[in-house]
Amino acid sequence: MQPEIQKYFDNVAEQYNIVPHIRFQTELKTADWDPETASWVVRLQNNQTKETYTRRCKILVSAVGGLSTPKECDIQGADSYEGKLFHSAKWDHTFDYKDKEVVCIGE
Image 1 (tube, rainbow, N blue to C red):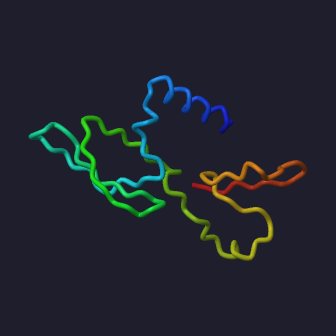
Image 2 (cartoon, rainbow, N blue to C red):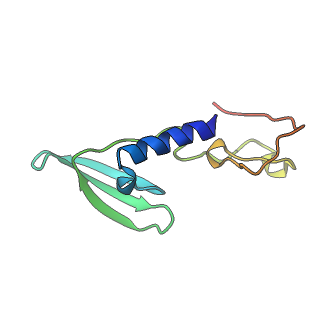
Image 3 (tube, rainbow, N blue to C red):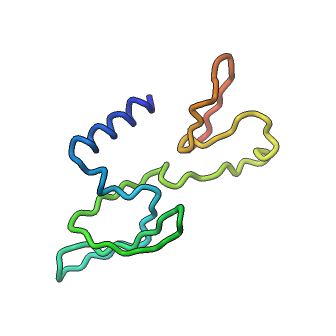
């Protein structure tokens, strides 16, 4: 389940002391290899402040995936749906599923 996976990620990040080096809520705009310095030149944008900045790094870990940028629901009629509707990347942990019918739609 998601909490177990999240706990695992948190523990690994803490164990290897990488949390201070992670840029959360940040979008990678460009990544260019510089052969003269054997490093990556990356341009980043903070998704909250919209600030764009450049960093240089020897190691670049790509952590993109299907949930890195959630796609909003574009199913016809979704805007008038009266039930609870949310993307799995924006999980609502307060929602009570007890005695509810749940439908998951995805590719």
